[in-house]
Length: 374
Image (cartoon, rainbow, N blue to C red):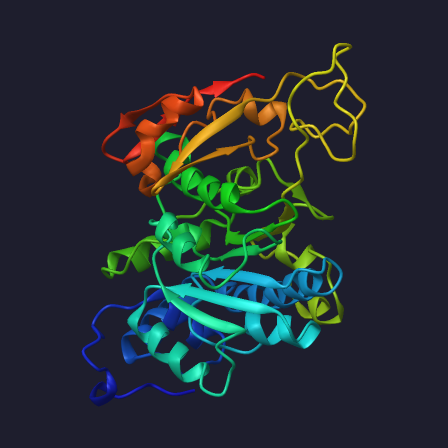
């Protein structure tokens, strides 16, 4: 392990710890500063479970990407909040299973970007790339990613340990973070996947350690309950075994070394193809393969007609289905009524598609979209 000297900081603020560098330290990496080591040691003294959690999170990434590139046949990955390079990076795992896999990393940490450039030396730019971006601006990430990935074919969007930096689960029913993830899910093509994992609030010592960490001036990391993490997968079909502690997701031999009580949950979930929404005269789903938006197979009656939503993307209008959301999700207290903030410029064109868009919350710059039952 190495504490990088101040002489090579290159203008970075090394007086405040940064989570990506602390995770590098916990994981046995080299890229951290004295302030990160001190914060990491203090945190681990309060919550010793953080070191096995760091290992479990990396092993989960490896198993998830191996499954997607292998069994699921996915060849495109968008890893948002990738953090510092470590062992078993997404592109290494994916391209070992399928050499033609394309991987795009996204992060906004200057040190991460510096190491990304070094990592990509000798790696084909046709298969691996980096975007400097922030999850709080998903439309920008998607716009740049579309130049590198083909969103008409399955893509896996990965959010590995980044959601804790977004929003506050104790405010507004966690609507801000949920709306950002909904934006990414809407961009997924049918057959695409969301991979997400994050620590939970089920260990009091972990909660206390994070309070102490926030007091150092670092960006707060807010934990969610397992139920709150599960909500990020609404409208998608989780791959077995579903949303579970990461050490229990398709465990292999290396998983046996991990404790059973790691409080980090995650899943891999697939976006289903959705059939046309028009009801046949007898109330049955139209012919052909696929599923209703409520998850029922073709040939069966839906729980309720599924709405179409109209979203405004920059410069154009995209008419979409409802993310294959279940009737439970459609009738929940948090209805799917928000598009991405950067989708607003073409809002007026929604009238031409018989949809209406209007601002509902200037503070969060989110917009409501009407639904129409066809």
